[in-house]
Structures are given as structure tokens and as C-alpha cells.
Image 1 (cartoon, helix red, strand yellow):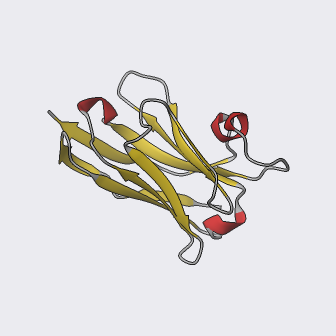
Image 2 (cartoon, rainbow, N blue to C red):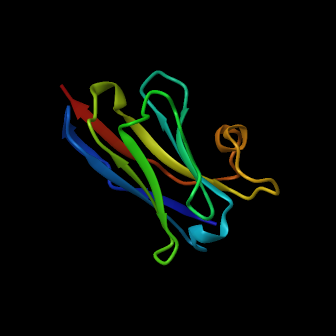
Length: 126
């Protein structure tokens, strides 16, 4: 399985970007797809995750109300719409996916993922 994130770039504070995550075998087959980010000199952190049906999502407190995760199973793509971007959102954003036997909970959403792809850089200027 290969995951590929795209859509990163340079944006001014207050601006928006939409990231996309596509999978070689289709994101629709995964029980959870998540976005993580890693800023320079910091550990990777959870950003958002969505379940297979697309009706359950979890967000890090730092992005609640600004970011929205969604999925289009027909296009085998998961999106991360990022609005009201701040300089502290600057990071490499990666998408990850996993299978799960249990319904998605916050613990499952934020815990270890099996499949990862290379990230895309988001830079927010002040």
C-alpha cells in the first residue's frame, strides 16, 4: 500500500490550503485515515482522522474549528481543508491509514497507524 499526500505550499497567515491523500489501493478500504504533522525540531503530532464511512472524525485541539477532514470514496481520496492558518501550523503533513476491528474512537484515531506516505510541506508566513 502506498499513500501520497499533496497540496502543501506557502501561504500567508489567515489563508487556506487543502491537502489530499490518495492510496494505491483506494482509501475506502481503510477503517481510519489520519493526518499527522511534524514541525522542525518537534515530534510528530496527530492532526485529524476520519473513519471509513466518513461520518466520524477527530481533531487535535489546536486545529478544531479551523481544519476539516473529509473523504471521497469515489475518488479514493481523503482531504484536509485547512483554514485560518497560523505560522505555528508550519510543518510537514503526512497521511496515514490503518485497519481496525473496533469502531473508531478517539484512542483509535490517535494511536499507531500501519501505513504511511511521504509528507507535504506546509509553510505559513506571518
